[in-house]
Length: 223
Image (tube, rainbow, N blue to C red; front, side, top):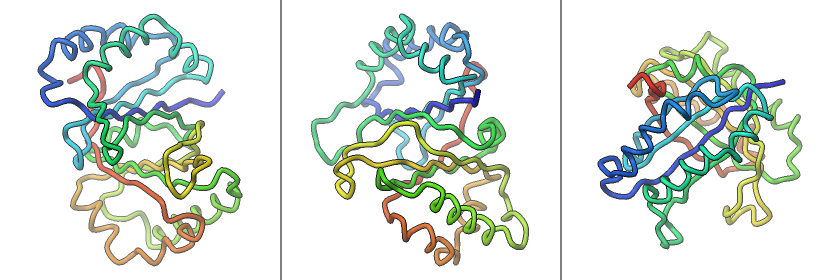
């Protein structure tokens, strides 16, 4: 069975990291990391939104991932997150995000890089997935025609398991194609994207709705 990579992002209340709820959540850490089927876990704060937290969990199987969501431990952590998450009523404010992905390769090599670019392309639910994947592969090949970009460490990609709602262009919901690439530094990541916008035209004909951000991940329990 393929690994399931769980992705979660939460905007945090001011002072959340200094709160009792945060301290209690950290105490739950060893038990959370010992859940059956959890192979690895990382966390970090996106550079673009430092007042937030991003978590990546890798599960051995979809069964392990599904079971974790109905466990008492998950319920306890979720209750604490209610106290930590900035649940703004402003419709323009970013909302918490949760999904899971079947990546084409282990996420660990990407997470180990000093900087990770997390990107998502939002597509119609009836997207021709093989055609999109072929376009994506063509873009990647063109970017690497002279070898991997300077500073590139590793990359993975795959489809999210759940549709995303709330995107105006896709009122019925959007299918999400997720990529993660590891880099030696933010500077090398930025430099690698200079002058290559035209290479992404083949992908953009499917959708121009996308999101990207950067994170330096720490392995849970080692920080």
